[in-house]
Image 1 (cartoon, rainbow, N blue to C red):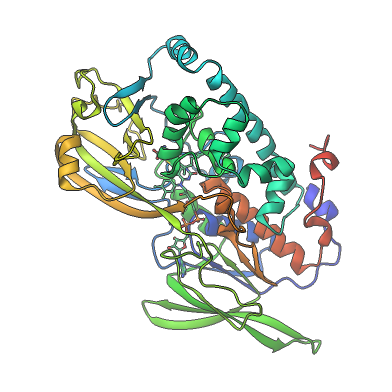
Image 2 (tube, rainbow, N blue to C red):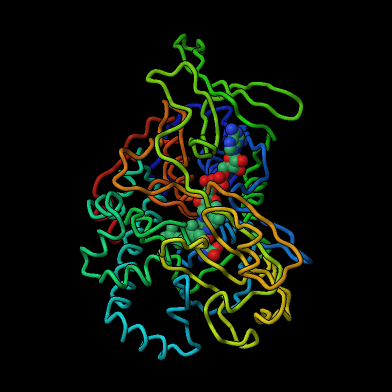
Length: 490
Ligand SMILES: Cc1cc2nc3c(=O)[nH]c(=O)nc-3n(C[C@H](O)[C@H](O)[C@H](O)COP(=O)(O)OP(=O)(O)OC[C@H]3O[C@@H](n4cnc5c(N)ncnc54)[C@H](O)[C@@H]3O)c2cc1C
Ligand SMILES: CC(C)=CCC/C(C)=C/CC/C(C)=C/CSC[C@H](N)C(=O)O
C-alpha cells in the first residue's frame, strides 16, 4: 500500500508491550490502529473497569434495548463506516421522523411532511439564513474530510491545534477559539436565526448554548444533517468488535497510577518504561510498558490517575470541566399538551422536540426513540400509544416534572453523564496529545469537538504518531501544507 512505500526501511525493534487506558470507542479504536501500525508481535493490553463502550451504552426497557449515550453517526464519518465494514456490522434501518422546536410554552416550528412547505416556512421567517448555514457547514466539513487523506498517507500531528490547522488552516483555529455565535454573526447570520434554530441544535447535541466554540458548533450543526445513522444492535458493538479484532487483552481493572521507570537497555543506554498500576477484582497489580495511551478524559469526575516521576509534572486533571447531561428514558404516554399544542396525540407525529435557550427551561430535548435493532415489521408507535421517549436535561428530572411531561409511564431509567467538555472559548490551551516521550492522551481532541468520530480520528493519529516517534520517522509528523502537497494524490 501507499504507506509502506514511504516507511523507513530499517525500523528499530518493535515495542514489546503497549497499554491503552479505557475501552470506549477511543481506546478500542486505538488498539485496532496500534495493531495495524506495529504488527502481530506486540502485546496490547486495554484497561477498563466498566463496560466496554464507555459513553456508548444501552439500556434494556421492556423487550428492547435503547441507546443512552452516543447515538448518531454522520454519513461522512469515514472511520466509523470503515469499522462497520471490517467488523461485519451493519447500519440500523432508518425510521424517518419529524422535528419541532419548543420555546417552553409552545412549538415555534413544526416540520411538515412536505419539503417545499418546510423550505417556504424557513425562507419566510429567516430569509436565506438556512441555505447559507447548510453551505457554511458543508464548507467546514469539506476541509474536515482532508484528515482522512492525511491519515491514509500516514501523516500525524503532535497537537490538537496542529491537527486542526492541517485540516482548515488558520480559519479552523480562529473558529475553535471563538464562540459559534461570534463566528456566525461574523458570517452575517441573524440573531433570531441563532436563537430559534442554531441554539436548539447545540442544546440537543451538546446541552449548551451558541457560546460553545465555533468548531464544535459546526460539528453540532452537521449532527442535524440528513442521513445520520446508528449501528444495528447498538453503537457499543463497534468497541467490542475493535477490541476482538485487535487481539488486545482486556484487563478489567482501573488504572490508578502511571510512573516512569528507568531501565538499562542492551546497548547500555538507559531506556524508560512506564509502570501502570491498576486495581481490579483480584486486587492491585502493576505492569511495565514501552508505550501507553490514555483514552479517558483527564478531568474532574472522569478519572483520577496519578502520574509520578515525570518532569515537568503531568497533572491528574487538566483545567476545564465536563458538562453534565442527564439521559432519562421513559416508557410511557406523552402529555402532548405539555408542548402547548392542541394536536391530538393520535396525529402528533413529531419525533424530535428541540428547545430554545429560554430561562427556566428544564429540558434540552425530548425524542421518541427506536430500539437499537429494528424488527422487520416495526412501525414507530404514535404519541397516543405508550412508547420510549428520551429526555436530555442538565439536571435529573423530578417526579413532578415527569408528571407534567407524561400522562403515565411503566418504567423510567436515568443516566447521569459527564458527557462532553463544557465549551467556553477561548480556552487557555487544549490539553496535549503527548504527555511524555511515549505516553499519549487521546481525549485532548474533545476540546475541539467531542463525537465518536473525533475519538476515532484521535486514535488513528496517536497510533501513527506513536509508531513514527518510536521509529524516529520525523517526515510523517507535523508536516506543513499537506493539502497542497497531496493534491492530485488519490
Ligand atoms: C448523552 C450523550 C450523547 C452523545 N451523543 C453522541 C452522538 O449522537 N454522536 C456522537 O458522535 N457522539 C455523541 N456523544 C459523544 C461520544 O459519546 C463521545 O465523544 C465518545 O463516546 C467518547 O469516546 P471515548 O472512548 O473517547 O471516551 P469514553 O467513552 O468516555 O471512554 C473512556 C473509558 O475509559 C474508562 N476509564 C475511565 N477511567 C479509567 C481508569 N482510571 N482506568 C481504566 N479505564 C478508565 C471509562 O470507564 C470509559 O469506558 C454523546 C455523549 C453523550 C454522553
Ligand atoms: C465529527 C463530524 C464531522 C460529525 C459528527 C456529527 C455528529 C453526529 C454530531 C453529534 C454529536 C453529539 C454529541 C450528539 C449528541 S445527541 C444526538 C442525538 N440528537 C440524540 O438525540 O441522541
